[in-house]
Each structure stands twice: as structure tokens, then as C-alpha cells.
Amino acid sequence: MRDLLRRLDGWLFALLLLAGAGALGFLSLHYGRTADWTAGGRASLSPESRAVLDRLPGPVEIVSYANPQGDLRQTIAAFVERYRRAKPDLTLRFVDPEQDPAKMRRLGITVNGELVAHYHGREERLDELSERSLTNALERLARGGERIVAFVTGDGERLAGGKANADLGTFMAQLEPQGLRAVPLNFSQVTAVPQGTDLVVLASPALPLPAGAVKALTDYLAGGGNLLWLTEPGAPVPPPLADALGIRVLPGVLVDGAGAALGLKDPRMVAVGQYPAQAITRGFALATLFPQVAPLAEADASQWKIEPLLRSGAQSWNELQPVDDAHPSTIRYDAGSGELKGPLDFGFALSRLSPDPGKNVQRAVVIGDGDFLSNSFLGNGGNRALGERVFDWLLGDDALVDLPPRGAPDRVLRLSQAGLDALGIGFIVGLPLLLLIAGGFIAWRRRRG
Image (cartoon, rainbow, N blue to C red; front, top):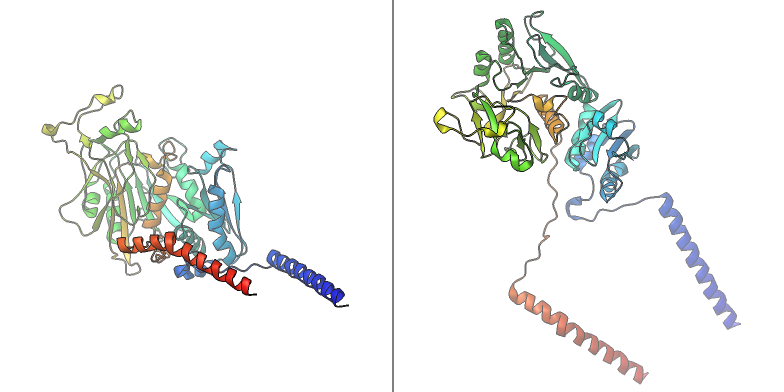
């Protein structure tokens, strides 16, 4: 009888164990529970990111244009999973960019793994995989609202909606889902920048601006307006506008002797891979390409805080002589003719307290090349991503969520040589000796028993 009860007890225990394992499996499939035990909770979303997600009622879709080969998709999925746990209606979808290269070019997808967040018909693109980048993109989506960007027209400027190689139609079409609306601004029809304009763009005028247009732009700056000015080598420069900004356009075209090592046959093509420290380029690591560049310099006195944004390499200079298109590599640096040796700045970010009491900060950007955002060159490297950062900064969208750094403390174990010796002796001598003593004690107990 006792043997039967013992067997029944064993079978009952086995059945209960199996039932418990099955219940745990069922619960694990239907209910999830995660715990972050890392220092500072660095494997989880920050409270700032959770607050942004709370301001996004309704579904959010993130599309990743990542190649299925390799581990990139798994990395992206694990990263986005942090957001999905906090917002269950946030979804992630992968698209293979190699299936339709022509469509990828139309969409402006240039980086493997690039993310695009969609929300209520608007979208934001990410050029880096980080919590700061994605949270700020979601913050811009949560803000909503339409911003008016006025493009000066009538004097041979690049057109915001144009399809010609030199126009900016492709770039502006990609900014429209982010809530930017481009409108023409022709000073032959109006005498001032209309109220409600968030940004004015002067994109490479081919003809000298009329006096009325120059006055309207300088009045707009004096009133606290934000401006993006793209100029070109040899392009007409309105002196009152340059004086109002405290910027000088240097003569000649910027050439870079280091371009040959990168496979650039024309020295007027300036490639940039490193950027001066500035809010626009913070964390930006993509290379950009500028076809023909006018070097810039700061004026002696200015009411603006002027920060370099783009800078050429040490092997560059401003070439004052005409460059033969058939043999562009025949040019030589000539200090005697007044040419300036690089590095030379060709992009500046300007800011100051706004004269407009309704705004805190007034901003302007001057870049000595407009081709890098044109339909022909937008797809080169990080050109589009840099252009988006410039617009974000000018429109104040850089002042978003400032996530605190959450690194792991004490990731490096520092031991003295004596400590290393003691640790080695402990593993080589102490641990085996302890095991021998334990084994001998167990053998002695068994003999006694």
C-alpha cells in the first residue's frame, strides 16, 4: 500500500509539474512582463520619450528601408520594440530597398536602414538610430501645424517646385509631409514679406536683386525674420543684405586638391566629411558633396552670433582664375594673386535675440552653394539629411527633447598588479584546493555513514 501511495505521489507530482510548466508557457505567450535592471534604466525609454508618446493619440507607423541581409533589421526591431512596449499601436514595417531602386530614389532613400515615421498623414525621417533622433522626430509629428516657407522668385532663383536640374523641387516635395508649405515671393508684386511667413529662402539669384527686394529682405531681417541665403561663385551679392548679416562673399570659386583621392575629377567638387561643432551638425556623420562653392568670411563687426557650419579641407583655396572645364586639374594655387589657402568657411549659422517680441531667437543660414540641394545632387551622400537639419534649425525644430545621457557606470574594472596576482593565484591554487577539501570532506562523511 505504501509503495502504491509513493508511486501515486510521484505521478501526481509529475502531473502538477507538467501542468505548472504548461500554465507558465500559456501565460508567457499571452502576457508580457519585462524588467530593466541596467544602471539608470538605459535599456528602457526615458521619461521624456514616454511623455512624447503620450501626446500621440492614434497609430504611428515606422517604415525601415533596410536590406534583409545581415543583422541590421534585428537591431532596428530591438530598438523600436522599446517604443512599441510603451505604445502598442506603434508598428514597424520593413521594406527591401533593392526591390525597387527607382522608387527609392524618388523617395530620397539613400541610407540602408533609413527610418521614416508616419503619423496622421505627416512623416519624419531619421538619419541615425538613437533614442534622441526618433523621439525628436515623434515630437515634431506631435506638434503638427503648417509652416510657411517663402521662396524669393523673379530674378533667376532656384524654384521650390521646379523640375529642372538646378531647382529644389525634389527636396521641397520631401519636406511637405513634415508640414512645410513652399510659396513664391515675388517683390514685383508685393513690397514686403507677408505676415505669418516662418522662413524666407533666397536660393541663388542669377540677376541682381532690385532695390525694393533688397529693402524688403533687410526690413524682414530687422523685424526678426529667419532667412536661408544660398549663393554661388560669381553670383550677384546685394551689399545691404550681406552687411545686415555680417557676412562677406569672397571672390573666386573654392577648389579642393584632396578631391582626387576621393575619385572626384573636378576640383570644384568639394566633399565634406567633418563639420565644425554647431547645433545643426551635432551628431551628423554623413559625407556631403558641394559642386561649386563660393567661400565666405565674417565681417569685422556683426550683431549676430556667427558660427561656422561648413568648412573646406587644408588642401583647398579660392581659385581666382577661370577654370577650364576641359582640363580642370591644371589649376594651381597662387598666393601672389591674392588666393587664400584653406581651410575656408563656406557656410555660417547666425543667431541673435529676436527684435520681434513674439520670438525668442532669430536665425539665419548662409551657404556658398545651392547645388547640393538641387534635383541633380540631392541624392549624394548626406545632402538631403543636411538640408533637413538646416531647415529644422531655422524653424526652431531643433529645440526639442534634450535627453540626458544614460551610460553604464563602472564599466571598466581597474586592478593593480598585486590585485591581478592575487586573483590569478586564487583561481589557479585557491579554487582547486577548496574543491579538494570539499571533496575530501564529503568522502569522509560517506565513510562514516
